Image (tube, rainbow, N blue to C red; front, side, top):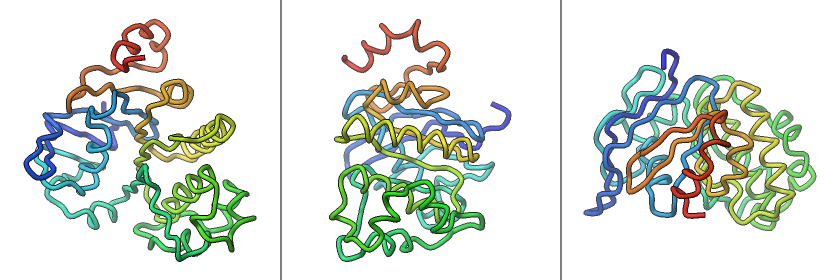
Length: 234
């Protein structure tokens, strides 16, 4: 890929003595929305955490915008322009919605201001004085995504953004993610809901046992559905 923003090659990762990733490799082009698919325990979340440098140990290569990051600290990686939205969302109960949004410092120029974030997430503006953890699950997910948009990051790592949400909220999250792609963000999405992933992604990488075992383009999903169901156990 000539214009890859992220190149992952032979990536291995450990938590303590547990060897989780075994040579993961893939690329994401500038402005692409790519998913990591796979069963529970395949290594998807660990891949995101490894890109951010927040695993116990890692080796191999992770190049972001031409710069090698595998030996850099997580705060240095964030300042390059990568933001991570974890599955558990990390909303601070002692802060209201607006205080949660203002918490992360900008790491690069070009981050969204509050007005722009509220235009994407009108619910958050209505609830801006509410305690962050008093929001519905969908609103908390919107808050978690909105918070990283202030940082100026241009690569967003989103871990299971639709987990546990009602179908109507899943649809809204999909609309928001598509809008972010249209605005030029590059997005790596970990998602169990394949139907949702198929609606938003340009390409899908499939993981098994800590490795990427296949890549399926969006245009090839229909003819590859049997293979995907076997991979995902559905």
